[in-house]
Length: 333
Image (cartoon, rainbow, N blue to C red; front, side):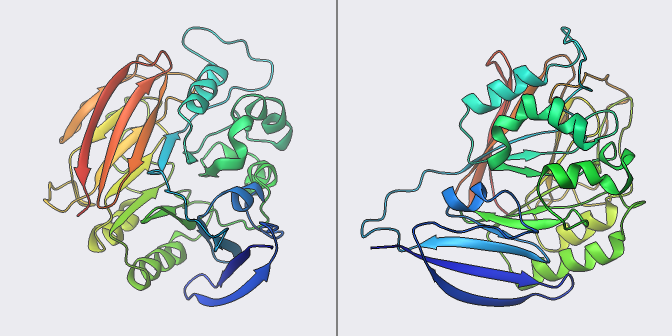
């Protein structure tokens, strides 16, 4: 007998209008013309929610309910060199990072922006990124970076990831967590409108544990870019609503910070933030180490693995050789 699948559609940027219908079929669900790849929905019992996007949750699949493993995310950005670039020990290692990420068998991949250098054209995505990280495309939740916008409107990025929605911010659920993917290219979109959406989503859909991801880091000790004030409004909103974790790329290094608010003040219920920009393009350098930075490295390519538990979470930065450089466990605030 076919399974029952509940399909939830959310529309509107500042307000969410939700309707739930039951669709009969054996996981025969597609995301619609503006959603992520259909494989996201055909194989995962998750929700993806975005203004103008379709989301699905599979329910009642068979009579027995199998134990669901604790979900994991692999998070990294700054990934693929232009097509034809030759890998060296310090550049263009996207094939190596992709292979290692796949070996970790993540539930989802959070690709933290600047996924395809230099200009993020569709041809370049198809001829470089797709030949490495494309193997993980069906489980990838992408973040748009500044290099994607070097193609007008980030058209290559949006075409490659099969979405006609051009704002680049959305939210999905995994386990008991809500994960907000934000667009920090505020010179390209209206981030004021985005932050209103973010605030309303956090207010209307409180969760025990929450994560946000964007390309530009609020805090970074990287010499090449460093901390950015652009995400400050997002951070203020996030701190007000007790967001637990912030992820970013942009600087090609790995760094972890203590709990802070959007002004850089240590707070018991602040946000733990990570920079994970070691996806393969190149490695940067340490500048002046920022206050509250607890770990920094820019010598080894690798990925950040997050395990999202019930009220707790753990992190593990692993090099492509399998070495764990920074790990720990924390509780949700």
